[in-house]
Length: 132
Image (cartoon, rainbow, N blue to C red; front, side, top):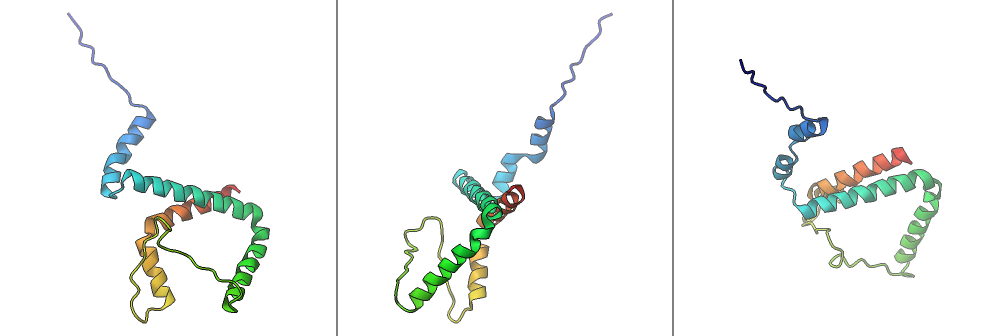
C-alpha cells in the first residue's frame, strides 16, 4: 500500500505580510508613480532630519526666528530686497488665488494640493522629534 505524501509549505511571516498588504494594489489604488514615491521618501527624510535637529538644537531656534524677523523688518523699510523666483523652484505648484481670498483659504488650498507631501514631511518630523 503506497502512501501519498502531500507537502505542506509554510510561508514565513514576511511573505504572509506581503500578501496581506499587497503593495502593488496599494500603489495602483493611490495612483503613485516611482517618481512620486521618491518625492514622498525625500520629504519624509527631510522631515525626519528637521524633527531630529529641532529636538536637539531647539534652543537656537530663537536666534533663527529673530534673524528672519529682522530681515523682514529690513525689507519693509526697503533696506534689503528679498525676492523668490517661484518659477525656478521645482515641485511646488502654484494655486489659483480667487479675488478677495484671505490668507487662510489660500493656505488651505495649498495644503489640499500638496497633501501627500505635507503628510510625509509631518510623519518624518514627528518620528525625528521622538528619536532626537
